[in-house]
Length: 113
Image (cartoon, rainbow, N blue to C red):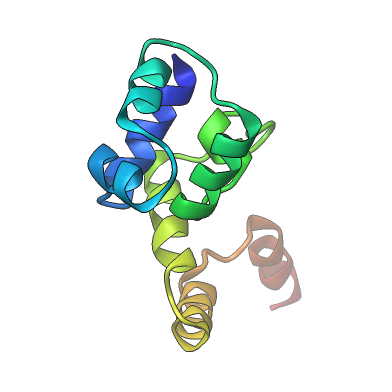
């Protein structure tokens, strides 16, 4: 049931209901119920759902090998993905300015200075 748990998580993050998915895609409420009971989605329905939610298969299927993001990191990434390019540039520049200085450069600076 990990698939449906992940689906519910992304529906919550994106503020989308099962009704909206059924209304705006070819995915029926019955199909969603089958998923909730543990049935795997067909490839065509999975692709349609990924496109509708605008997320990756790794995110939805929980196959993020080596990418263990915290819930806050996932939320920030989703906000970022929904920004226009100008806002993304502003966010990236702000994040660069807020970064902690690496320990190695601190010790190097103290040896030089």
